[in-house]
Image (cartoon, rainbow over all chains, first blue to last red; front, side, top):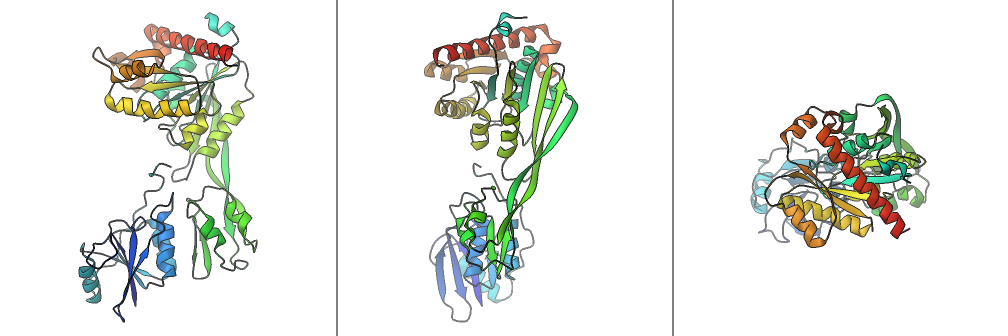
Length: 122
Length: 297
């Protein structure tokens, strides 16, 4: 299966980005091939609706699971419409989260925040 | 009646603005309207209108304000995603062969509907708020209200200010939203004069500078009201002196005024000292506008 994670830098030693919609990159990790691919998040600099666009990117890259520290309502609506499960990252390191996910130790992300809409100088 | 009311004070629009909330926009605009007696007060702070708390208008008439947002027919949609890619606010997503529209994110530009090659998108009306009109003594009170969570109050402000344009022979006071963003630009666009309200702090100077730059950009005649003035040094006053900005009034940091205000009273109607202060301010501002009209017709 394919796992997507918002990340700060384009390498596996990097950390999980605190934001989903405004993360600079996404890591798409394939659990079967152990292959990893870093994709640019073109939603990062959006005027608005970054979460929606970022979620569209995750869906288009055919991820089966999203690992993220937090997620807004609109992004979650898109992710859930695509039947992608959202898990909550519990470590800052990418590798620790991937290991925890593989061991089935990452919880489902329960709290979906209302978003920060219009607070970016609307 | 003061002589400035007898002169050609026709259809004069005075906008009151500040770089942040709580500096005294509503205090100034409500009291100016009360001092002018026959006037129009327009509350453009549509996210949190509060002028009505002081003016307590009666005989309220209201009208809902709608915008047009896209509606998709997924039978016609072929998934080309032209609309998804076009939308600057990312209000559309295409998931599992279905287009999803995020109503609250849409800014009603209509672009997606124009672009759709399959005519799968049409428009529907969505209520985003309302405008209310009432009377408080001789002041006509307009209030705009944006529903919580909506993307922008600009359609409500357009309605408020367009509805008011035919009202001649009256002074109109526009109580602007805080800051210097699009919604404030919309509020001051057709104003004849801008009153900038400033607090006597360094933070106040920063906020004053924001609206100062805005009114300069819009080429509006303007003056500053220094609010909450103390005996000590006033950084906002320093700023005005340095930039050669006209100070049109000074309001003291006064317990009596604070008490009247927190009891939702209009100072002009309750206190002779403040009647005089705001009448003088009104006269100064009116003369400024007329002077401006005479020198830059």
